[in-house]
Length: 478
Ligand code: GDG
Image (tube, rainbow, N blue to C red; front, side, top):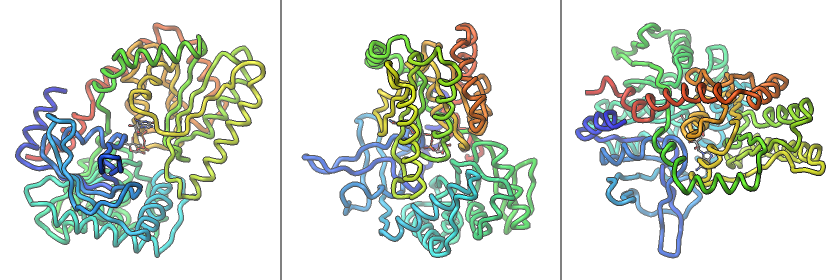
């Protein structure tokens, strides 16, 4: 990692990094001592925060609208001291923009479609128009702030039109783009009435990154068939209007050392011991997700129920801890799903509590990173079973935090992470019977096999961390 960091330092010391994403990495919050900026907890923030600091960079985005209104356009983030600083630039959104651009077109049209949940996609031209205009607004703000010598990196499906708008507004600016979700197959993507302008939006970039080759191939097929553009699928190059756009696979990762180091601290150790005292020698199975229908939480609960039905000797011998972080609570599908999850947990706990413990402990909130790592270290089994997931960082964080190498990762074959974490027990999350059998297999697995599998995944995690992800993505940039 040291080598990678110094290479990144060289690159970004001469060229400022400007990140553009829907959400800013820090959210304003009112305290008795005035407004404080609180760091978000997502994977992208953890990844890019140190890199923005070393490049004295700029992050452009929306503050999420939950904190106090901010009158200033820009704020410098300089805490913690001694770790460099960077600026954040606010993009203010109106209620209508938040409703149409964010909650509707981004999260009720593109999100389900990109995850292959076509039936859940809503197609509404008013929402599309606001998405279009809001993307133009993000691009305008970027154009106001950036110089041709900057490296501009636009992120995710919310901002798919931004690269084209930036280039249109100022041809000297050369944006890069990364998509954090899957990119669906041609037959799914072509259902979108605005599939053409979305592809053209992506192609305003110098380079487009996806987690997997499969997603990049899907994209290239769509470009070829929908835009009739010149595509070299083997080299991953699109030729358009006399320009070449590179398209490639760059699986995102985590700050592996940071997770491992935290897992080894005394504070985490104490937390683990405290939990163990409470739980005794029960087998701990862990799920951690944003509460999202793509994450397969309902099916996972059914697999736990089936496991308890089939293997009665394990009743009162296992505890399933599900951490669910509230997400997109204004969207109807998310509210419906929350109700279903609540009811399913109630039913299973009612059915199997008997004289012993409720088998499911449900934590519906975001927990501090240290507590999360303690759960990762504690868990005998991590059940990471999304119905579809671009990558899934929880799987990688669990592996990094398993310093005792006693745990088993059960991973959905539909998570991008399954392509790298091949020593996990891979399952089809919709096959409830097999998932319940796999839980049993994980419990019975000999310690030597657990260790061997975990070490294999840890080797990979150490070699391919978040710093190598950024370095590889910008490999060709001088
Ligand atoms: C999108 C793609 C892709 C979660 N709960 C807590 C918490 N987290 C942090 C985890 C992790 C992140 O949130 C979740 O990352 P995922 O990758 O699992 O999922 P998405 O949010 O859907 O992310 C996904 C990712 O982008 C990156 O490209 O992998 O496929 O959908 O980092 O640590 N953090 C804290 N408390 C929690 O309760 N502190």
